[in-house]
Length: 262
Ligand SMILES: NC(=O)c1ccc[n+]([C@@H]2O[C@H](COP(=O)([O-])OP(=O)(O)OC[C@H]3O[C@@H](n4cnc5c(N)ncnc54)[C@H](OP(=O)(O)O)[C@@H]3O)[C@@H](O)[C@H]2O)c1
Image 1: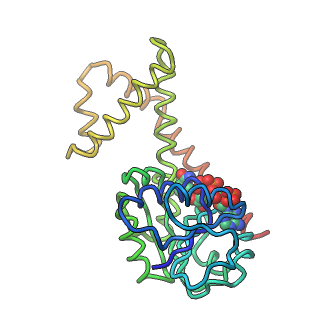
Image 2 (image 1 turned 60 degrees about the vertical axis):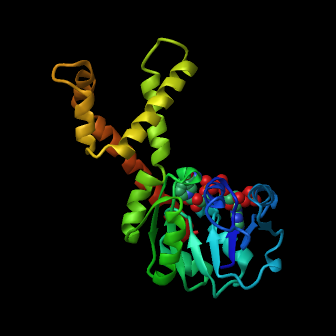
Image 3 (image 1 turned 90 degrees about the vertical axis):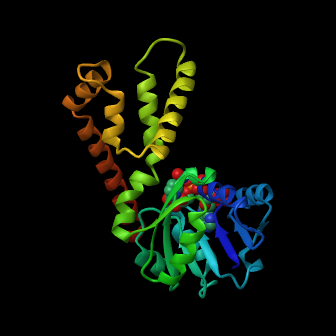
């Protein structure tokens, strides 16, 4: 399957590094407008890159690896080429139907991975109404990089903040936690905290208990861990988090509206 990838930024890089050990990438071709990111990534992965889309024909899949705000510029650069290909879009916020219209193509699968695909510990959500058969092929490819799950488009849009953004949210929480202490230097506390995060992640992967069960295993009645948790619960940590998520949803709607109405 010949695959053209438009954009070679952080997410495309993570996917290709993850895939490199799992599958043959010799049929993958990279393109980016500056040429620089595509060249650098192609050289490190060992696949082809092109400086002009006129060098490319007969592709089966075209991945969209740019930002949502760059979609219209991308559409004008492909200018009706690759009409018979299936598009695989990494873009957040823009509905499938609007991406099909902007690109003037017929088949598109939306894919929402997260950066840990690089280490084959990713979560990828997928949805498509226009290319259900190809969705299965794309899903098996992303299954090589961790958990890949087909969902409805509305679910992909809502859960992007949990899975796509999720790693940054856990890192921010870890930063807040480590800055609540004063022993050692912040850099030394970061080493400890990263190991705690890594150990907690490993435990989540191997332990069969649900999250409540895992919290209970650390806490004891009247103990110090419970004192922290009860304070957070009383002070509305859950509301703080859900308010933050609502800001993300609002921003996603603004990006979609500005793209569709300009
Ligand atoms: N980063 C994440 O954690 C994450 C998570 C989930 C989903 N995503 C999705 O992944 C997509 C890419 O995000 P990113 O973080 O990888 O962005 P990024 O690092 O900024 O990379 C964007 C890439 O798009 C290229 N590009 C810009 N305009 C283009 C055009 N007109 N045609 C083709 N390529 C173009 C850029 O090329 P130049 O280098 O030439 O400028 C660059 O290689 C976004 O749609 C985002 O929603 C990202």
